[in-house]
Image 1 (tube, helix red, strand yellow):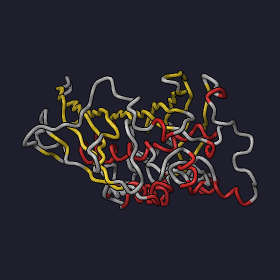
Image 2: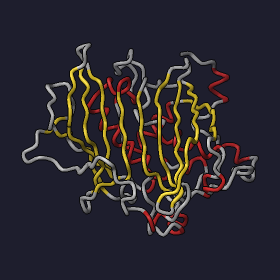
Image 3: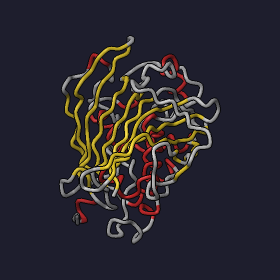
Length: 339
């Protein structure tokens, strides 16, 4: 997994290198307008390489308040002691692959669904390759949707994560956000039983009906801006007040991919190292979260399947809930095969 120092110097930590602003006037010159009519199905996006360096790991920790010890310290992870990237660290890079062909700062859209399969951890200073395809597009309730299927591979070619997501390419977020157009087909209510049995992880006799101890979060404007690529000079409804108000929002909203990543932190706490090899999570976004708005992430175990090899597949409903009114912002499902 060693990479030569010259390649490390040439590969940036994001899908675009913001240093080119020093000699390039228009960073989005030659890219397409993000209009539904400009989609080409199928359309290939990437490949692009980036390095998972110390700065990227620490930056993600700030963005999500996800200071996983395995990511922050050498010698403590169950993966031969190597520092690894947090489970969700590549999520937004994959989501943003479309901006390699479309003008990211012209996008006023909404993420409606995200799905991740975890295959392997990614290591500090590893150079990864991100690549994907727009595989489908359709009109629903007057909005133009597009489907992205993508993934990230490590320096040795192994799969790190695989992704499938759905997004409204361009809309007026303040007019459509929260109208539940992405209501899951299998209803996830976020309701918990009376006198629930709370657990932090599944290692100690997990049972159907166990509830995951809530993970409480508040994403500030600074955190949202950094996650949503302000450091690459991309302007959007998540990192810029003026752009948010053009989208009929009073204040920037947290990117769907960002509060989706709080589910990956919750699942890391729940499943530990098994998540990075045998984990899966899918969520649909049903109402927005504003910057500075408290919320919490939790779940409930719905099934435990005994596998022929002696392992168990634990399945659960998961959700993200706004603290102000108790409304779900994301509803979904997760599973992991545990030893």
